[in-house]
Length: 113
Image 1 (cartoon, rainbow, N blue to C red):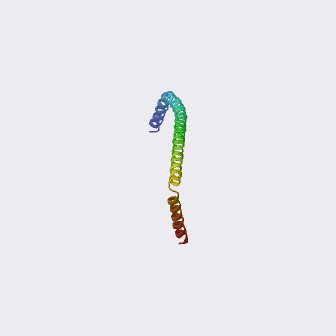
Image 2: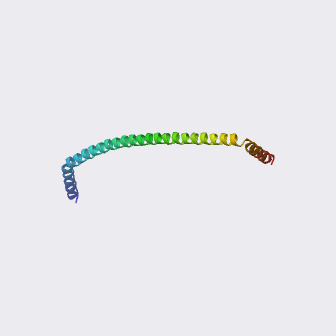
Image 3: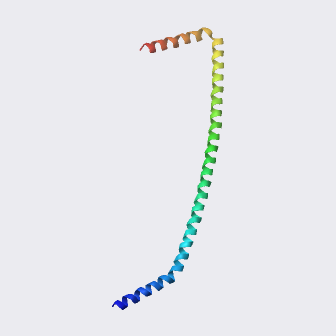
């Protein structure tokens, strides 16, 4: 029985020796594939970062333009309102004074409570 056990061990070693070159080649190929994938991931990461940064920068620029347009619109509306108010005061000074006194009286009443 001992002879049979040593014979199978020798056959296993011979088979392992024959498979070793194939296994080594497979391992080298896997390492090369992993290195290539790592390089591709780094390239993709940099590309994605640059794309996200560019999109964010464009978004900020658009928000800035829209914000400036909104501020200019508010300024224009404020100027128009001021012009209308001045025109109304010039046309009806007594009515404007009475309205201002009434508003002042209401604020005074609300501030007491």
